[in-house]
Amino acid sequence: MSGFAPLTDEERAVYEWQIWVPEFGEAGQEKLKNASVLISRCGGLGSVVAYELAAAGVGKLVIAHAGNVKPSDLNRQLLMTHDWLGKPRVESAERRLKELNPRLEIVAIPENICEENAENIVNQVDLIVDCAPLFPERYAMNRQSVLQKKPLIECAMYDLEAHLTTLIPGQTGCLSCLYPHDPPAWKREFPVFGAVSGTVGCMAAMEAIKVLSGLGQPLTNQLLMFDLRDMTFQRNTILRRKDCPVCGTLDI
Image 1 (cartoon, rainbow, N blue to C red):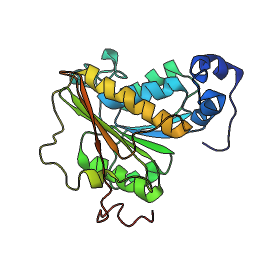
Image 2: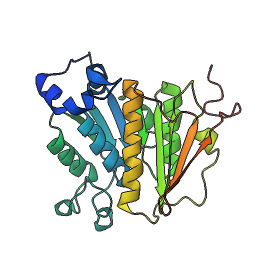
Image 3: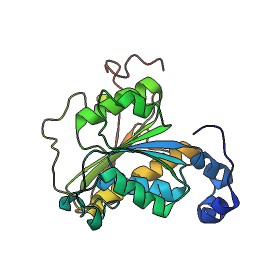
């Protein structure tokens, strides 16, 4: 977004209750309004991330997701609706987000992120939320995050388990430090409840809000993992690999 736009009276009324949050206030809300976020895939994770960021007042969302809505999307992809079956996912997402927040600027890209388009798409935003299921797509965003020095919120889930971390070039390692190689067991289709992807999606949205506004302490250098079968949560420290081919040459 060009320039810096102050809040309008309408926006103050809409976001009044979150403006009351200590250490956030109107200054934090203005930062969200003037921020832009890429959400790669608006599926089970990305739908919830996009919806929460739109509700919170982030000014611009770039959503990238190829393909049309399928019946199997509807158990978790909350921006997709039954009446949109067979139509493009990004169009359904844009329609639903605009219903929630008509002030929102949306760039809807009917493509998945890849090495060929990642540079141009990441260049349009301040922060990336990676909700993609496959590692080639995730690695492409990670590489551009490092090259363009854009924060990257990493979130993923499988079955009733999920993990989340915040990667900031120059301050933390990157996705390739955490996963040097594409895990062979990671597949496009996997068991999923919408409530699980929605849980980590909300948490990823909060991480994005924190990084953009300066509120609280993001999950930097920490991998949060949880299992909703028994509601257990744990954190592991992430170490930056000096020999990482992606971020190892950064001057920190």
